[in-house]
Image (cartoon, rainbow, N blue to C red; front, side, top):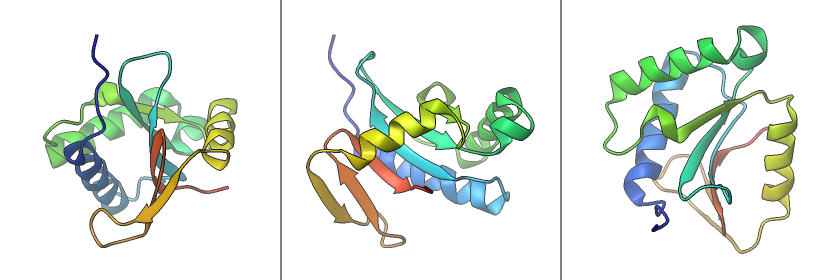
Length: 127
């Protein structure tokens, strides 16, 4: 099986989704793409307090509604993993990001600076 490549369209779809989430005042503590070793594809991790306050089902419904508005080219709800910014999963991802390999700074859209690690693409991170 071939590994799905993180292409520009997925990065731009993620950026559009985050813009829509900000417009909706959906709290995002962090958002980044990670290459999950247990699968053959990239996953967009979104850390949000909604997971803690209202549960993951509410978070995924809000993400689905935002995706329906944005109508991304390649990004689907199955590509997104909503996590608590207080949870072990999020802390694990942060440790990987901190210890990441090669690093390149830049901006996909000219907005906020972005950081690309060897196996991730970071839109924003709160410590």
